Structure formats: structure tokens, C-alpha cells
Length: 192
Image (cartoon, rainbow, N blue to C red; front, side, top):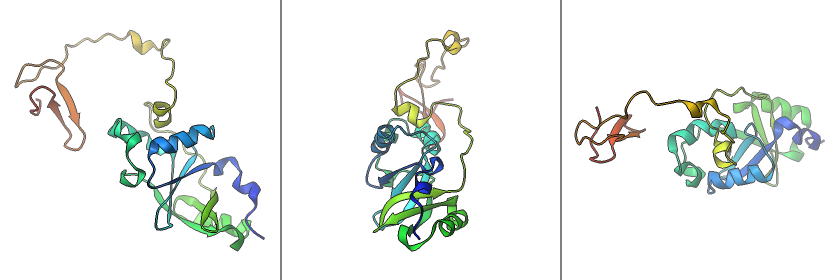
């Protein structure tokens, strides 16, 4: 007997399947169209017919690090922390054996296919708590939150902006993530 369709529709198995050549903008469009949530899995299909998985919430730190390029870069070019996962044909395994295989698989997730196309997933990992305290990738791509009542809007700056020791420009700093240094926007030299 094939994998039960009810199991594939279970809340913990919600996902969006995306091809590696598409961008995260397209992945988030699909998530929004499905009225999905950040805990849903993104299932990535690679051209060599392998599969990888991660939760949309796992993209938050990468979005912060990459800035605007995050949404327009093809998925295959991103440094994603996605786990390669096993896939099995729906009609070749029963529900209990599929659950057992998912428990033993990397990421505790199994892609279920029919004729090589993803028709669902089985995730036995459960929901994870969120560790990131900033804006989430889905919030950045979705509608902006109403912050008019946020107390942080009333915070006042107590120190003047930094001044470049080379050219004297105020508020000069830009942070280079790869080199982990501050750079003057005006003169291009590394700040103090």
C-alpha cells in the first residue's frame, strides 16, 4: 500500500517545492500564494534529481548578511545550509516504512515522489524554536509590520556618529561582511 495522502497533508509536512535555478523571491512568492508560514520547508530540486530541504525560517540570518541580493540571487548560487535528503517513490513504500526511513534520514525528512516529481514530504523532526530576534526573511519580503507603537522609535542617539580618521567624513562606516571590517564610504579606506 502506498504512502497515505493524509500523512502528506499533515501540518508538519507543509512545504514549497522550488527548482534550484529560481530565486528566493520566487520561493517567497510561492510561500505567500500558499498562505504559508516561516516554519514550512523549502524543498529544493536540483538538476541532477537530488533534493535538499530547509525551513524558510533558516534563511533569516542569510537575509541579514546578504541584504537586497538575498532575494534576487538564484538558489543554486546561495550559501544555503540545506540538507540533502532522500527521496522515495510514493507507490514503492508503505506509510510506516516511509516514516521510519524519514526518522533515519538526514534532516529527519523524506521527499515522496511520483514519477520523479515531488508530491509531498514526511518530516519527523517537529517544529523548531526560533533563535533569531530580528526581522525574518518572510517579514522582509512580505508586508512590513506597523511599528508606530514600537517604543524603540522614541530612542534618542546619545553619541555622535563616527568620523573617518582618514577623510573626516561623519557616518562614514559601511561594514564588509566577508573581511569583517568597517570601510569609509567616502574615501574607501578601512576605518579605525
